[in-house]
Image (cartoon, rainbow over all chains, first blue to last red; front, top):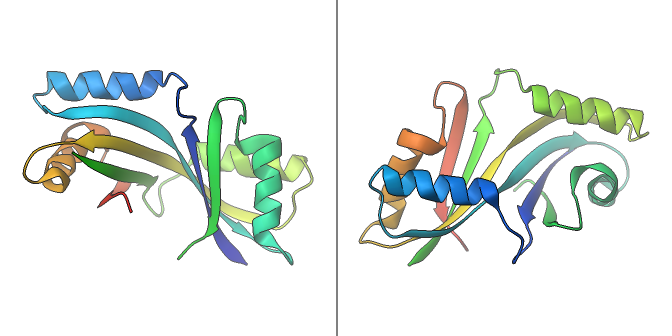
Length: 78
Length: 78
C-alpha cells in the first residue's frame, strides 16, 4: 500500500469564491497585506496495486477533479 | 510578499464524512484496494510583513482552522 497525496486547486484565472471569502474575512479581522488567496483540496488515500500513482491519476480524471476548472497534482507521500 | 501554503487535515481519529464518501464512490466506480481516504483543505495566500509565517499561524488559530478537529501545517511555497 502506498499513501498518495492529491492536491486540487482552482485553475489560474478561474474565480475562487471561497478564496475571496477567506481574503475578505482576514481583512475584517485586521490581517493586512494578504492577497491572492486560493482555496483547494488535499486528498490523502491508501492505494494498493502495481501502479498506485497511475490508478490515482485515473481516479482524479473520473471523480476527484473537475478538469474544466481545477488543476491537480499526484504524489506519493514523502 | 511570500506565497504561503496552509494544509488543513482532519485530526487522526476524527470522523471524516467527506473522505468516507469519496472512498465509497471510488469503490462503486471499480477502484479496488483504496482505504483510509482523508479529505482536507489546501489554502495558498500571498502575505507581506516581517514574519509572514507567524502571521499565517495566527490566521490559522483565529479563522482558518478548527483546532478541535483539524491539524494544520504552514510553510512557504517551495
